[in-house]
Image (cartoon, rainbow, N blue to C red; front, side):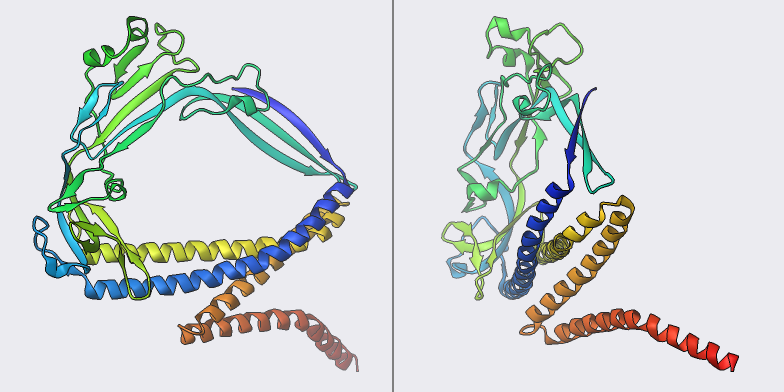
Length: 400
C-alpha cells in the first residue's frame, strides 16, 4: 500500500467566514426539514390507506393460464410460471438461450484511492487538516478514474477491454398474460451461466486466446502477462449469470392480456412482483413494511437536517471559542446537545401538526410530550437558583 500526506492550514477569519455562510444554510435547512417531515407523514398515511383499500378488493385468480374478462380493470393476484419465447445471448462469450434475463458482470483489478482526514485545532482559532491518500489494488466493477487521483503518477488504471451489460426479455409471459420488461427486471433469481471454455475461445482471435482462463465460474482476461499467476493492474474477471423461467407471484390490474399498475381511489399505485409462490396477504404485508421503513427513514432524515441546521446556526460561536481549543470543544459539545434537543422538538411538533387532520389522538399525545420536555428543561434551568436560595435560607436560620 502506498501513502501520500497533505497538510492544509486554515486561519481563524477563513473559518469564521465559512461559519457565517453556514448560518444562512442552517436557516434554510430547518424549514426544509419541516417540509420533508410534513410531506412524509402525509405520504405515509396516504399510502397506508391505499394499501388497505387494495387489500380489501384484491381478487385471487385460481389459474393464470386463462384470462377472465369479468376481472378486467380489477386488482388481481396470480401465481404462475414466468417464461419467454425470446432468445437472449452474449455473442462475445457464447452464452445464449430462452432466458428472462442475462447479465455480464465485469470487474477490473485496479488502483483505488482512499482518503483519511484528521483535523487539529490550533491556539488562535486556526486549524490544520492532515489528509492521507492511500493507494491499493482491488477487484472492482467499472473503472476508477485514476486521472482524478491526488497522486496520479504510478497509479494509472487502463481502459477496460470488456464492459458490463444486461439483457431483459421483451416477450416474457406469465401464464396467459404478457409481462412488461420492468416486471421481468424484478425477477432476480440469478444463477451462474454454464461456460464452455472451448467454444468461448473460438469467439476470439489466436492472439487473444492466450489471455483467457476459465476458473471458479469466472472468465479471467489478462491485460499484460497471461503467464503470471498474480493479477496485474488492468486484468479483468467476467461472470455471466442468467434468470431461467421460474414461478412468480404478481399483484396488479388486469388490463386485457397484461397486468399493469393498479390505481386506488386515492391515487396510490399497487404494482408488485415476487419470485416464488407468495400469497396476496403476504405481498400486502411486504408493501406495508416497505411503507413503514420508508417513513422511518425519512423521519430520521428530516430530524437530521434539523439538527444540522441548528448546529450550523451556532457554528460562529464555536469558531470564536476555538481560539482556545479546550473551550471550543466544550462549546461544541454544548451546541450539539442543544441542537439535538431543538431538532427533536421541531420534528415532533411538525409530526404532530401533520397528524392533526388524520390522527388527532396521536397528534395530541406528541404535542403533550413536547410540552412536558420543554417544561422539564425550563424547570431545570430555574431550579439551581431556587435551590441555592433555599440553601442560603437554611444556613441563615441555622446561624440564628
